[in-house]
Length: 424
Ligand SMILES: Cc1ncc(COP(=O)(O)O)c(C=O)c1O
Image (cartoon, rainbow, N blue to C red; front, top):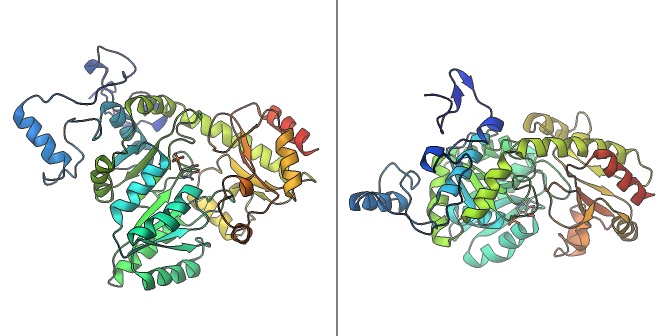
């Protein structure tokens, strides 16, 4: 096959890189009047070539056809799938070596569908703490009403703490899922994905159920952390963040190997969370620059973190690349990540100092969310984590003086000037 083929991942024996494949993989211009870029397929339904083909497509989509896992059939109806979703799913899967991808109308739709697909009443989800506020509410308020309980673990880089947490979880019910958000937000602490995978297999060896290891890979994936490569069964994304990358869409994704993805793909059309064609088209455009954007933002973040560490008005700076030599976090960072990403947090001492800093910023915008081209800062204690009681917030290390900074792709000298002026 020639490199012009829309599913070719090698050029003779040369393996093509994701950066190259993001520009064309999964789309055949010959099927769309030679249009170099995919059109937006604004249609709710698709014609079948014959009645028998329609029957087969339905058998595959509903999981009745053996061996297909609901993935490989023809197009039927856009709540099941559509060409713009397929393009994004196939391109995203390339980054992590996934068999199958699924896009969703938000990161929360992706997380909720993955959890519901793999858990039943009486089951337990062991999860890192803290996790994103929406995930916390789902785990602690919504899922328990359906008989699915949550057990937290704070030191998910420590084998003894993880083993103890698994024992606590198994005492409550069948451990169905180990959910890691790594790094965590806003303290940017890493959980050990390989350790969780090993312990999940150990559960099965002891005669129990093997829990699914699901990783929220939003903060470092797909460029700096390959969750599936580290042993996860599912890699979950808020594509709203770095992958979308321009703060102009809401989307989510789940990637994984076929067996773990089958129930997720089967549940998506029933909960109705598939992503619309226009947002998928925007994501396919964003994927063309995701490596450039994430690399530039990470380089900016490294320079800013180093400057903050040396600043007299700043206390602790939380950023993976700053983990102390010889520490567990350092070892994990070096083994699990190929870069530190562009999200950090740092302490300026008090709520008053934090508010003063945020109000003085000019280039950096005062907003929640992260992963866009522009730099954003917020005060976690009174915004994204304001739902947690103060004592719980303090217990996990989020104080009143903590600032969260999502570094963008601006010129780093402008960001440094802005931050230093606001700290002065
Ligand atoms: C780590 C993480 N996971 C999931 C989500 C939820 O994503 P979405 O807002 O796309 O639903 C967020 C949102 O901020 C997040 O930061």
